[in-house]
Image 1 (cartoon, helix red, strand yellow):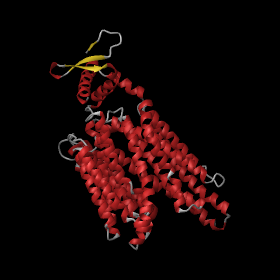
Image 2: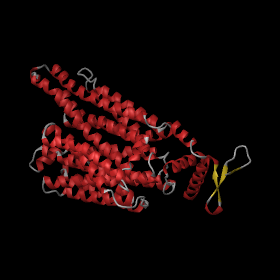
Image 3: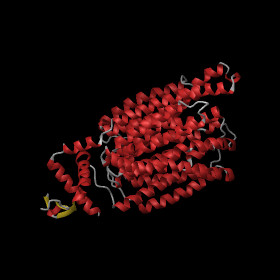
Image 4: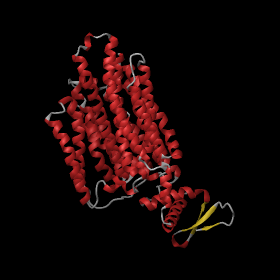
Length: 542
């Protein structure tokens, strides 16, 4: 490298291929040094496309995300209508919600690796097209069985579009800007269902639940057209055979855990199905590890688990989703049973959580870019612990006002931490494994969600049962509220423990100072070579 002779140079020259020299502004050095560090440590490539194009890719992908998830919350609310239309029970209709959750969780790892193999754009387009098909099948379902199959398909293709879309965003953004993109991702991910409740309630009331999916199919087609026009082609970063054996065993382990948690409360934790499901988890994991060690092209390179920002970040997502989503499902029961809220009032109250989440997340992404991912993740996870403790302090005197405070704190917590944690996972892996990173996040988030919902509800029901046996019905209204609230308090305390685990994992992430220390440990010659390559890529992009 050669520098200007001025005391404060504003540019420097770098050698390029073929002996050519390019001039790079001096103010660009910090960003190039970060790119160089990633190139040396992880072997990552420069982002695809220019700055403006990256944001077009983000808006396009977020449009697809909105089209896919806008119906989720309101469809859960419409289960009673679905059961009535098919002359079945609400318990049977819950498989309409459970089936896509199970399919999403078990399909995510394999589809994430598939995106790395065939290209994330191809996987995203295929997944989006099949999502439109699943919406049409849902709207035309003649019976509950077909409806469940259509929703199961939506879970599988949702895993495809989810992993591919996140990987596409990571591909086009620099690692220091990924947390900003994840802030907007969180906005749409949380805000879509909120808007769905507002719009979907009107559609269901006037036109029936099928109208939701007619509208959704049109939205998805528009998102597909935009994706064809905007999304960049991504190179195939993996070659060789697909790791079918690894995919099989991780599916066995994931399905066993999800199915056991789902069936435990209704079938009994000692039932043969539940016991067999849980027994499949350690067996599947052991066989998965064995298969990955022997595979030439493993589904999940096990060395990724030794990277702090990968293993601690997904651990944080597991604990945070356990507490957040477990509390999200438990709170409506609290409002209805302890405070006598109706369905509409309950819905308007619990919207406080995703609403705060969606409002905070974009700004939190920019904040994390300034203070570091670990600081943001640690702050958000700590607030999540506080929100669970506030839930556990609700009593008849405080009323539902304290519930709203706790809901807002939960939304603030995940809004601050989620973008930082997602970016930490992406920045910890080579670009060739971005699909794996995305699917790993989806899988652990799904496991945390299902586990939190089932465990917290089971704890609450178990604690409420002795009160009922003791004669809850003959107590005064005040004493009845106290007894019921006690059962919810215990469940929220379990959520606080999970949130504390998430906080400990957040503390284990690399700090900004640690990242700079890693940069200082890179050999000068290696850094100079990578810096030249990064500068050349930056000049080409401009």
